[in-house]
Image 1: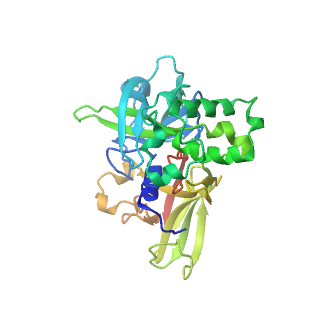
Image 2: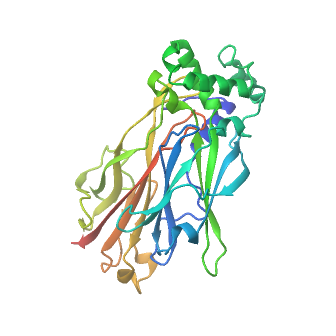
Image 3: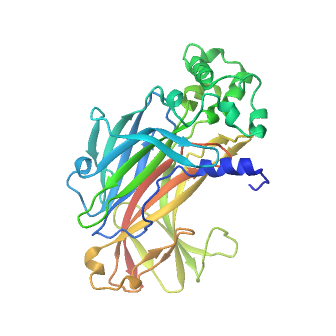
Length: 376
């Protein structure tokens, strides 16, 4: 949906989009000799102060013996994110030794570690991201749009009010007009937290992978219709076979899908034939409804980020120009130019996005599929 928005609204929209990992390098092909993080997975996606978050970090490529101790794990519950997307980390600390953690099996070709992170009850109250005179920091246009009475309250008074209404004994007494007024207030009183994983490799400078999540009270008010963001669910992963040299299948008009292969198990076969184009896609559900800063209800969109790995024995001695490649913009697979390359692993991250909802916690999930190519 396209619409004309003010500069301020555009800034809010931009700020809402950037909640995913920030990688020190961008990559799609993951070689067996490289140790790479694929994804942080936050569950629940929409956590409130005091909740326990399960954070799973999934890695591929070269294996490490001890993910907990071979990497540095840091967290910050005090991150400043302004209306224009500028971010400042006020402080950060090593992961709490009391938090539960354990290695987990995520998929056959990855390593993963899971942490149970306790979000402080006071994260919103203490966050430097929201000043005490919070309404004074807003542009006049946004301040004037606030429900009557809220703009004159301090940060402490607002948090006290939210927590009062969030109590299970009081939520049933919330009037409809109060419920509607809470939605934009909860967007203003959303704060970032951030996780850092510092990766050290012998002979290389260490680099840090960063993941930011947003903490808000929405899930405390789910019973009265306040929207909550859920993690996407992947129903199936498909490779479409399309007649001709086609650049995209987003617009299906004029495109002939000759065949499709749905991944089942770990030995799915894709038949490669000249004169066809191939596209990697994920079919997902759990489409959530969001409420924008302007009070409009809209559906989120799901996007896909694709990564892959080839068999190290098959590609030995073959120039990388003959490898498989995958275009992340449209999912098009360029099949290997050398037919000795047959085995592959695909990783697909499905994430959701919405424009014009401020600091919406991003919902993201990761799936792995593998198989082999047969050339005709």
